[in-house]
Image (cartoon, rainbow, N blue to C red; front, top):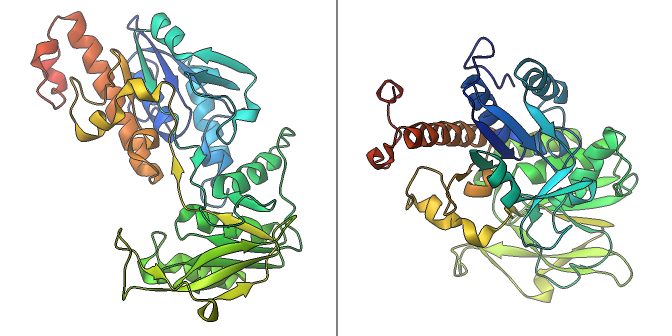
Length: 365
């Protein structure tokens, strides 16, 4: 978490200003790169601490939050990076549509950041969860992975503006097999849940998190149910149970996934009080419709990782979708390097030299 690993100390200032929106892994990596290149950097984030999901989603046993805090403090104190926390950068989308929005005190426009800086880098991550599309999914006691993890992690920092699910003594079903699902199971166990089930429609050998995580969960007391999927959530005033059905590959669905056997005599009901659908997240960047992110993903751009808006770049999960931290860091570093080259060649009136790849540093002088 040493985000300025590329330099031994602050370089001379180059007179350029950059705003980075999002203080997660890609945003912090980009901040470190640009700080080492002499930029004056402002970092905006809706949360009260830098780190994004590394702090407010991923449990502390995976990434120590004090390491992230130490890296951010070095950026602030040694490299004069300005963190504008509890500040959400908005476009035209409705407010309070993503996990964590309730912690923002201040709202700023994307247009204002573009006007006040030489460039802007959007690293807002994936804070909107995909929802289950089955009967009962709107009952009290049904959460997405982030809706469950975020308040649990926020409460550990004594943040009061969140409603923490009552987990102790409850029976919890977690749907999914990515790292978010695994983290939900660990959190539920640590918070005193009576029973915790991990439910996956394929086998553990096919799980995105890997079969080892299944074994580790079982060693902690979790129960893994494979080759099953949810049919409906039972209850009227709250969750009373979860009906599961076996999943078969003999007749895969249109996406090539195993198909649930929709027969009552083949299904069974799991007695649970809480259902957590950890089935993925989506990015919701400000002015998403104007950024042309699909073109950026395909590489159909006039400059590497630049959006359809001049001087506005994008990096991390908001561009690629949910990924591992290493990929987000790499994306942030690559976008920062591209941003730096664009501004440098623009000042030299050499932008026409771009051929789809970054130019060697020695050729920039």
